Length: 115
Length: 318
Image (tube, rainbow over all chains, first blue to last red):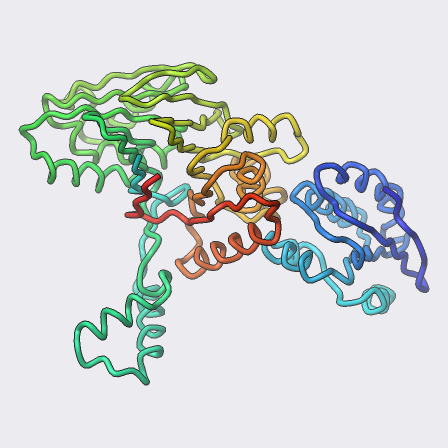
């Protein structure tokens, strides 16, 4: 899976596309790994732009949980932005809205994490 | 085939508190303010229109589920505190003078799943026959130890019924009490076993106290196969997915999300959420039910799974 990377000021934004389900979760995790290593107190804050993500299954949510744990251990900052209505519901039902800070837009997330 | 739930709560029995009842009463009275409730029929109709979390309760007994398949012998899954009202109902129905046979199938031997046995009145009545089926080699030890001083005043040797223990092997079909029965090893401290019961083309799965490793594709596929085309899957949905894979990982329980996904993979007809978190009140369980139904709806891929949440007293006809 290819993640599109761009920087907004000091914040790194990764754009994700499509479904993160049983067939793609491992690829997503692998693609995310190098960016997570840089997401520490000394490194860049990370915003996952989910605007083009259609669906996240339990295995995809597990990959996000592992990412959150790694970043927390590194004292970094990670947030998710621009969830579609369906993915937003999945986050709420699975209580992943309590694991991540969710922002309506990438700009809003970048502005907050840059503070 | 009929399924009757006598205990549906996880880990430890709970009961409604005065504060819980007060919340229900306030909700009900508030909703009735602009209504004419002059007659009993009006009141009953109003109550029938309230949500289950206001007009009813999910109950608080720990795991105990009965399967009726039309035979003379009784089948019950686990001996949580729900075994006490189950036993009472049997005594009321048959009295002490008409011996019965009970087949008990154990998911595992943790306390919340055996604690109802000393209060299961049929064990005290001579002539009753009780067979405890389990895949745990130490099943007899667990039941005898629970009856010993200083934990209980009536020793196992004093029980009047003929009580036998039958250690079964997982992944092996057995014919017991007119049902075809098969067990599957599950992930839980000290191991637990799920059970599949089949009778005249109907099937029910009892899969409680089971944690699922989402990253293990072979394990997911094996459970989907075990659940395949079941008419009902009674499933440990104790935690949210976020809790089940983080702060409560390795606690041996699962979530509503994984229950829906496995039932979708298995093309099961119904998901019955079970082993409710004891900290949840009726409103919270009702909320989780609504959310789970919505999750099933937005993830449905041609095959609909009916989602229910078990409550003490629920009867399902398959």
